[in-house]
Length: 104
Image 1: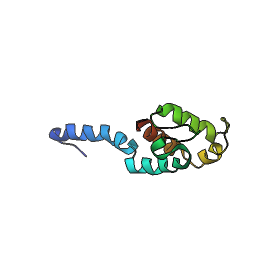
Image 2 (image 1 turned 45 degrees about the vertical axis):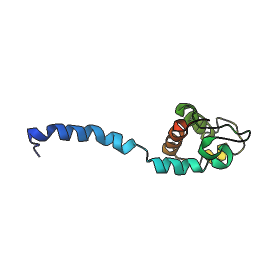
Image 3 (image 1 turned 60 degrees about the vertical axis):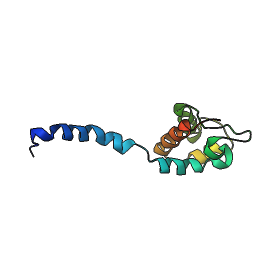
Image 4 (image 1 turned 90 degrees about the vertical axis):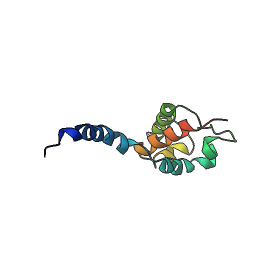
């Protein structure tokens, strides 16, 4: 198939944008995943107890800790069990969501 010269910029933009769109997490999905953490880490990641708050923490730190729990490389009470229920993609999405929340 031959693309007319006038459409080349559009075609190029679609090729470049497609991977970014495919990887962009849906905000509602991220919030839904994060809601499973609310019992311990508080609504929006703001803990009111001894469990650490997640809101505003660096995405890389949250993701690393979750993966360490998932791989039994980090000790914990319930987190090693819970982390196993998340895919690596879900961990990345939820880490980004918590990182984007304001810590008050």
